[in-house]
Amino acid sequence: MTPRQMIQENNRLREQMTPDNRDFYETIVVYVRDSRVDRQQGEQRLLELARNVLEAQRKGMSAAGLFGGDAEAYARTVVETLPAVKTVEGTAYYIMIAWIGLTVLFLVEAVIGFGAQFAGYSGSSLNRLSLLAIILVAVGSILVMEVLTKSLAKEQENRKQGINLKAIGVYVIIAVIVMALGFSLGRMLPVFTVPPWLSLVLCVIGFLGIRFIFMRKSK
Image (cartoon, rainbow, N blue to C red; front, side, top):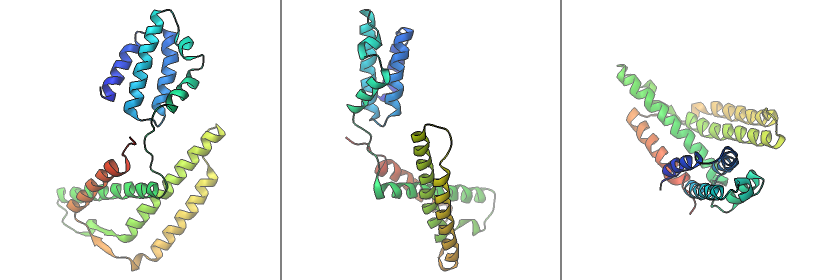
């Protein structure tokens, strides 16, 4: 069964549970699906648990009695037994972020270029892309992602709403320095004419790279 089919079957089985059993089981479902376990194996395990709940229910036993009184604690034990999705770490992580940023850049360039052609605009100024822009997009993507991830991590650690202003301030300063250096060197860096079809090809290559290089799952 595919993950989609397993989810549909899971939903069907949940409809047969008593309200208390369903609430307990759905806590496990949410925890497992929010974790970084392999999706296929995670859904297989959840389907097994759903069948176990219904079997126990027919015997007069509750899900809490079957799995223990703490649904989240049991869910953690389930996650620990499942293989995790392979994460991109270290240098490869930052390469992936820059790669995604540049893929989006070429997507925008392709849309603008083809849009201009469709509108009858034949000028080449919209097809010009500087090395400075490429550098700023790559570095800027990494900086933005760092701000977001560190802010979210700090928020989760403190268990309160808000953002990490200190982290944002640091990365904004770094971004300003990078942009200042980039613009100061802008006249020294080359400018390329990139036709829309080439931007589209580079965009497709970018998406293929994201899919088959960076998003592979661990066995």
